[in-house]
Image 1 (cartoon, one colour):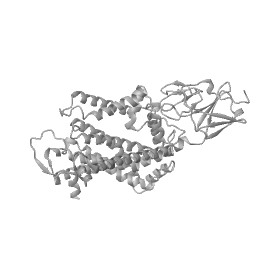
Image 2 (tube, helix red, strand yellow):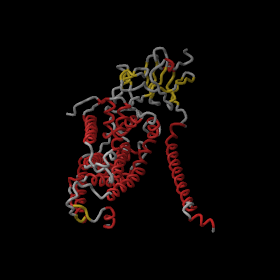
Image 3 (spheres, chains in turn blue, brown):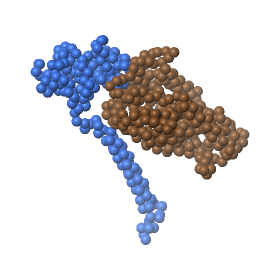
Length: 173
Length: 340
């Protein structure tokens, strides 16, 4: 009885309003959890393809079949294999760094020419003419016996060409 | 039926509110067009398959095999494009009647949300035919996202479900286009209408002569006849102009001319003239902020300053000019050409 009197007096806000505040608070917590859960579900459903993907190895032919100073289109990987004059290899992505168009190699002029905004790249992927902001992406190259293998699942971003990006096969060096 | 109608509308409206030139029927036209999109979209979704290659074939199937298939796709396609135009004009009309101050502030905000939804719905729908036009337009538009500092690249990967446009992208765009966006559309459009009613209907210049007319038949007849005119126009347009369907999407072959969807083309055009950070982040953000803050400064005066008007007109004219340049004056490699 004493407790009831206290609850009604204005000095004590009372259990009723205290409990209803807790309920409202819990409601917001539940809402936050739902939103968090929903967003996490969505994000995890999107990430599946990119993060846990196994390496996608593409066979680019034998080392001897690709001569120094040539550019070869690797159909299976939808990328270019550039072999410089000194024998170093570069696997170059076709995706223009400007807005993502597919860049073809134009053999007559010895350069990559983007059809969308006329960016031009040289045989190392370096930008010759903007608007492309940086060099074309590279793919990691590995050698197995005398075969060249390209991992097309992990494009490597870079500002420009540097000699350490070149891959050399051990047998030749 | 009439009960539902009076739920949305009052029994009587001021005679002035019936004048066509007060609104040019733009909001009503937009609502009608969204309704048409629901209907035609519903039909198209029965025959559409959201998987690469199949999606292209199913659109071909819709166009060539299904009863009125070509017409329904045309209608959905062109109504979507006209909707963007009508919604922008509606925004301008509301702006120039100054109908965004309290008590119409929430109507203005829900309207801005609806504008965003219209653009999103249009953009997600753009990819669905899975032809070269769609594939490369979405590639370019999503690559523009990547230029936003910090958030850009995660946002792009989230949108695409990888590093380039693929089946995962199509899947996401399809579920946004057919489930999430229609639902959000329904909720926010209902809210938009409810707010109009709550804030006392349309904004009228002078309130001296308060001649009130009954909504039925005065307003109802006007609205139905205008709806009939708009529907006829869209139907005729869809009968004479086919929605484009180019070759199937080919990730290794970029066509000669690649452009973002026309309502994002002003951004692509800006990108040609200034650094990416300015073109794709600072300018669009400041324009959005301008539209968001618009209802605040004039709460007391009810009259917008000339400067504010001037800023919006300049922004708008710039966007129109850039869009026109992008659509008609850009040829292969985005070189400047003359369309004639």
